[in-house]
Amino acid sequence: MADQNNIESDYYYDYNISDADGVCDKTKVDQFGRAVTPILFIIIVLFSCVGNTLVLYVLAKYENLKSLTNTFLLNLAISDLIFTSGLPFWAYYYMYGWTLGDPACKAVNYVFYTGYYSSIIFLTVLTVHRYMAVVHPMSVVMSRKSLHCYATSIVIWIISFCAAIPQAMFNSVVDADETTPVQLCDFEGEINWKLQTVYLQNFFFVVSFVIIAFCYTVILTRLLRPTSHTRKKTVQLIFFIVVFFFLGWGPYNVAIFLDSLTSWGISPFNECEVSRSVDYWMYISRMVALSHCCLNPVFYVFMGIKFRNHLKKMSWAFRKKNNEPQNRHSRLIYSNGEEISMY
Image (cartoon, rainbow, N blue to C red):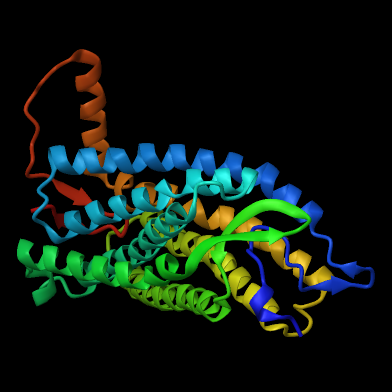
């Protein structure tokens, strides 16, 4: 049975698990994470910053920010940028350990997980809104004004801030082990809180996935009716949205759940070889999951015909230095084939 009070960070060694020779050697796992993760994190940061910054610029310049859809798209882009802002710190962490002090450890964790929770919630809310636009276009939800948009966004941010509080309260700088001189940013002596945050992430993912899968299943059913004029490409795109959401966050949530079983000392996850396999899975699935913040601008914005037109106009104006007036009363064609007013 593993000693829960001495369980170390996911990013480095777990010294409570032992094999036939004594201590479970995870040197190769650690080397793999140090070599691969920082490079991929930097790539994700670059693509996410460019994509989500373009989303913010297009929304602010060309679209009416009083609409429910645009408000959620704006907040989703902000969430992804907040989420992305923590990745350079984690890339540095993988290479050198945590050398930035205890306040930075708490702050980076809090900001990072605030972005994580808000991003997933806004993705879910956008899906529900798209569902209402297709299945119940005349409902009261579709007629909400700007005040309701802002109120809904504020509630989502409050939920995200509250969900991330344990990351600020219980994360601190700790020493890994006598044989490992680096310091960690982890839940020191608070393994129950650490496990609760894992299960909270699992809860958010499962609820979001169930809602997203249900909404897009109904949307597909509606679009595949004989009376629907939607194109095959639209149906395929909706399918890809659900699949990529699941493939992006599903394996990572499974990995952190299995890692929690290691923390509880549950067999066979407390065995060295199994624990090493879970650690490899954790590294790979985390990199795949974090890349989802790069895909959000593609799936939820740039697939819209009008957004692509705005980008073309912006590019043309930049090249020709032409300040032609733009039509702010445009309409956006979403990937579900429905045309929803932007104002």
